[in-house]
Image 1 (tube, rainbow, N blue to C red):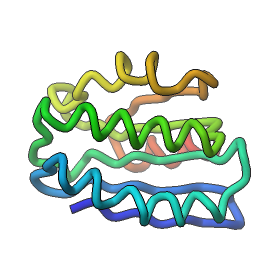
Image 2 (tube, rainbow, N blue to C red; image 1 turned 90 degrees about the horizontal axis):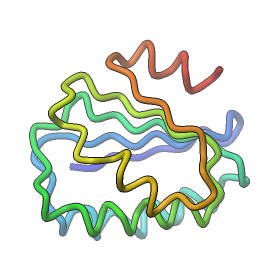
Image 3 (tube, rainbow, N blue to C red; image 1 turned 60 degrees about the vertical axis):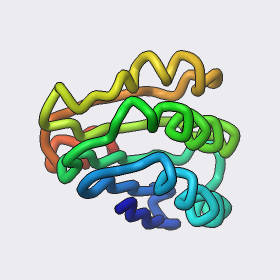
Length: 121
């Protein structure tokens, strides 16, 4: 499951990946994410929480890249990723090179507390 929410006042979008993620879920989440992004101004911050992710296969990379393109087009300024298990990184740094041409600040951390600290820094 993918769960997302926006804090308009703080200009933050939180995206949580829970359980076993399939490409179809990433694709289906795109419309919801697009509507949430409409509430934010360019330069917004994004917290991506992978702490509850059980698995996301390599077949998800294309859809994940499309979502990253959408975040980039909306003007993301900082992306903080919570990745407690480094084996679940999914090649996000490599994908970022191709899908974040505006070069937002990218930060990875291991805990939710550290993630929020880095997000609001």
